[in-house]
Image 1 (cartoon, rainbow, N blue to C red):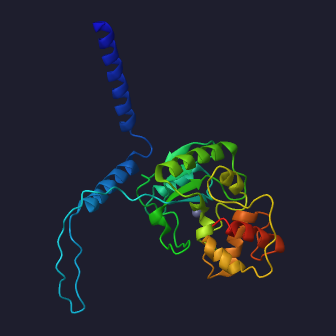
Image 2: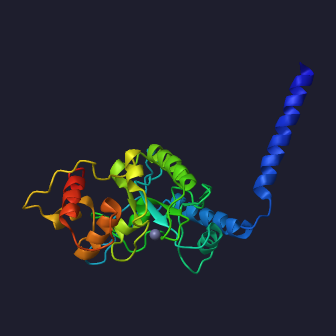
Image 3: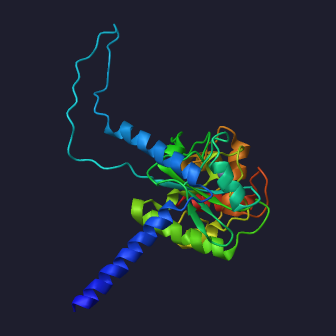
Length: 278
Ligand SMILES: [Zn+2]
């Protein structure tokens, strides 16, 4: 009995030393992982600050204020998932871009064509993937979303392995953060006219069938004659200030037949069908 216990302790010691070693192997990204750690540390100081808001009235006189910490709180959660394609040659090239300071871009996850998932940023942190964007009245999508980049140049199909990993990741994110079905959207949806990704080839219908985002039904009732397409697009979430761009973004996501910025009768019917889901 005593021998068995010793053996167990020995095995546990080996496992723990292995896992420690795994964490400290100086890998290709050791230097940038260190920068990540230091940056996360410095941000934790922001969270620990206990200063009341410093407010002044219209004459510049300070308004009395005091800090009294509540005992009931946790971290804010992401409420959207934004899907991208990288438009780069390889995962390695994307990781390089996201570990260089100069490009000023990042995402929480990168998924390779082989299905490998690279987690680059804690889900609670704000990645820089959305850029100038708008969905509904939200103008800071980076603050409320998780960014997922798929290794794809934009003119090629998405691999089965990549989609399988994406679906598993989406299921985890939806469950962990209670993300509504409607809130799984693409970069092109929130930045019409500026970004086309994840593009016309992305299998939105497959995602919708699993509960991630919406797609049109198989049987579509024709839109009524007085159907206001611009208002419908706006109610779904599209920024319609540039209406042709919003139409193009809608068609790449929900119609996926041809890439244009005009609505055919079929597109109108699909729009009517999709808009009723929101
Ligand atoms: Zn993008």
